[in-house]
Length: 397
Image 1 (spheres, rainbow, N blue to C red):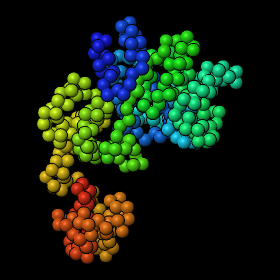
Image 2 (image 1 turned 135 degrees about the vertical axis):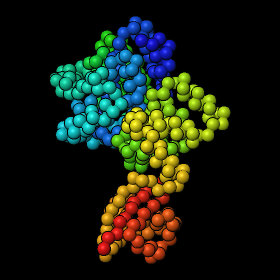
Image 3 (image 1 turned 120 degrees about the horizontal axis):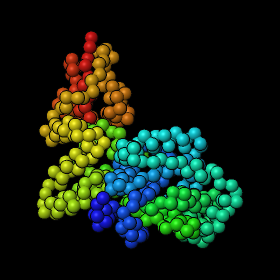
Image 4 (image 1 turned 90 degrees about the horizontal axis):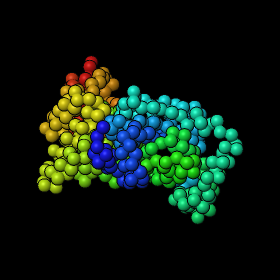
């Protein structure tokens, strides 16, 4: 077991805020295994690096010897948390919740040690509560306190409807902490109200309040917006190692340290060394290479790092054609380049591809073209779109 100071240093790495830090130190001083809780609302099960910010912190706590319990909110998911929304979130069906929960379970174990992680469904206790139990739980909180939550407050001030059942979402999430007698709960900064509800309810039920660890939101590849698949600024944990490596190399320089802190397990002392190196003039590109290696190794292993880095250097630094490009065959009589490009997902439409051609963004066999009419039909055509998209077309009689 590491010293209390060392544990706190690791736990605090990249954290936005810790509420109950002194209480946490007291618990660590007792040299006991702490119960660490994370609640997941199974409404968006496709995980990218932004989702792993909290999971990586759980892994660090797990490596320190503490017990990780994942709560799949199959019951609360039927209500939907309207956090940050101007209206109630559409409730999920039981089938949707269970399907998403299964997907979540598969993905979280790409970060956490499955053998050392306990997964529970909050329907195990919430579905068994009778109406009297619900009334008693509701009596623990006032309407005025609920309206302190920013999204509820705005909707109330704008005379937008708030259903009574929405008030029960944070109550139920807090009650999960009571059921576990949790020592620590993690979540994003956008979950502040819900996380603090656990502390308040634990006090009401005579338990020691949990320490609340809030992690910051991670900006995506654009360096501005929260990482999101809908915005296309994401790095998926299921993506190919080469794609993941390339994407990491595109993050803005000002986010390098934040990515080291939030999506790697690099020790905070090492992060400080990297930060000092950057401040003393080290080339950010070299630091990003180290970051890319760290992230790819976490999800694909050491063996994948070397080939991913080699491909990146061939395609992006040496401007060469990679060996592993996709190959398709086509009869000369049926040859239609725009159609092949669209059908293989390299452009959204034929018009988009033609626009890329006229803008000089397409090369054929290493030569930039500005018109499809200039293409010479040979036995093999290698098409390059932008810097990193390639396809080989083999023409047959």
